[in-house]
Length: 372
Image (cartoon, rainbow, N blue to C red; front, side, top):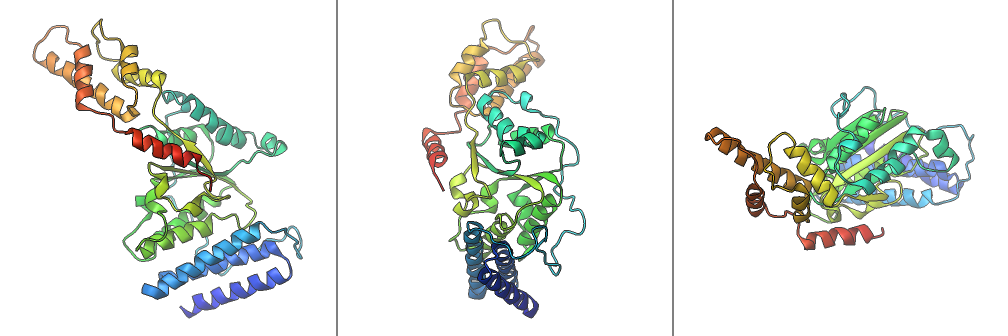
């Protein structure tokens, strides 16, 4: 405890001195380190003492963000690097728990529909990372943070895997549940390890699924939640000029439950809405999942796709599976030339209603239009 308190005080004083010298690059670094050690002190305490350290950490993160907007007038050599070799959490060995070692087989072309979304992914992610010199020439960012949000069952996780398939760089995949822990202080440590390992590569992609479960809005009664949010803000805050390129991807079904500080510049500052499949995409999904089974001549999948307006991708897969089971039952009962009938589809649609309501779609639209 005394070591952590001493380190926190040391970084606070170093930050103040750097500000006095108008050396804002160093000041940003020391503000981040002060926040980090405040957070570590919170991990070692509980109750109101822990809450006070968490509040202190958030305040130092805000100071760092304010300094990031200041004009930098360094008093040290341009090629010097601000480091703190006493940080016991520096990455010293590979943390392979979240590293995807086998490239996913799914590609963007395998995903039904989403023409606009896939083009945005190419513009914002694939092309800049694949063409760094051209990106630098035109001032297009290679990394950054992108939040994919929308109703469940529409391919957000599949899109992330397709991005990993397209890129030739380390890809880290974790969920909020993977990172969280019942042990005090362990969730923050695991999050810190994950981010720092991803940052240790020249180019990398970090995808966090179910982001709302990891970074909920502050103000609740969970001290652990507040500490985890604070840890994320400290690690992904743009306090220092990055020497590597890291693309930060997140996915959520409930973006309005995520702490708003997560959406500030330098974190998830781009939003990508992954909505319901259009008519063409619904038709592609039906044909893909029913391609190997016999259909009755009167079954018109294009007409069925039109009738499925408002259904999610997973809803449509469920309907296709129900139809195949109906044909299977007829087959094993001895019916000759068993096939999927139009009535099977109609019956499946009665049993499997739309999982997304108009009210929920309005919430997504409102979030998409919101500015942070």
